[in-house]
Length: 400
Ligand SMILES: C=C1C[C@]23C[C@@]1(O)CC[C@H]2[C@@]12CCC[C@@](C)(C(=O)O1)[C@H]2[C@@H]3C(=O)O
Ligand SMILES: O=C(O)CCC(=O)C(=O)O
Ligand SMILES: [Fe+2]
Image (tube, rainbow, N blue to C red; front, side):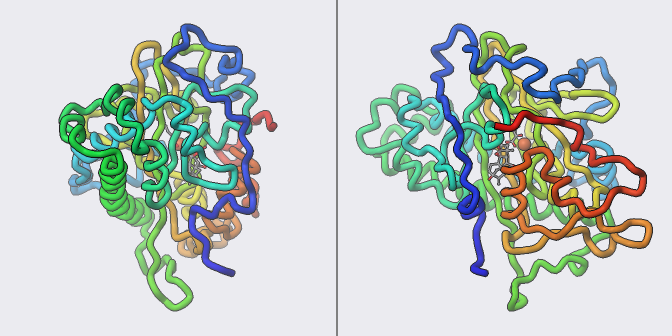
């Protein structure tokens, strides 16, 4: 079989989204197409707990001598944590935020020039999971796999200077610097920022993966991700820029509906505006507050499979607010796309049968596109001994 990249994931399974693209900034009230009730997303029925609840997502200093144990506890009990001292320069995160702000400030018609195609991964559009809901989300996204240069050239073509100057990029220093460049140079500069970010995040994601697996007693020799000729293969990634405009009635809108990520792990940067919530069993929806310089790391479905369910992927969503435009940048990290992911042998035994069948990342993305939050149970081969269903399997979603 020819080796496929992440960009090919949906070639055999195109997703046609009825994309209704709003100019959010001009709206004084929410149109019916974007008004959610609890019935539109069954997960909304869990309570949203307020800040007086003492339980909060663990914050872990990556330089702490107990980092392995702390990460293990957080993955087991929360499926999500925040990390500090992670080594990613804040200036780099702010530059990506600047690129993102510049992109989402473009007029809708301009952004649609880089629209994601039904069988593609990269580009502008509504969240892929939108097809499972009858209501639209109060957000827009831009997905990047590989170089974004071609899409950036479509977004900021030669004759587009006027808009670029008008909206700026929300970062004064970059704005002044860029004002002496042509638009092609802007696309190149923006693309360089994304490339630098990818390099740094790839290193952090790899380090976090081994810390998470290390906390389960797994070492590199327990995992064979080598290619057919023994060559070692690197993980892949998608970068998702999310934009959640201020919303006239946030209680009726949904930024990004509850989902788990189809990744090993996801690293999320949120600008200083909260909105991310995670579902904690027995408690409800807990807000993950932005902490200065911190990054949120959540367990994805593929780590759930690898760990044979010991580290469950976490259900999360993004809510919106009345006054602030929120941006988030998600680095979705996965294994080499041709590698079969299955429960690690060392974690399997007579009392711990393998719970999932082997599956590649691309195959899993297709399963997610077909079954959404039931994708994990679609690859399940064995009922758990304790008789419980998968933690994320309790939701029923409207299909179509
Ligand atoms: C690799 C991927 C994971 C993702 C689908 C994608 O092909 C690129 C975008 C990712 C994202 C980001 C927002 C939430 C999400 C569920 C979605 O609709 O697109 C995730 C997908 C995922 O993790 O399944
Ligand atoms: O914006 C957020 O806080 C969440 C984004 C997210 O879950 C995603 O991109 O997968
Ligand atoms: Fe997510």
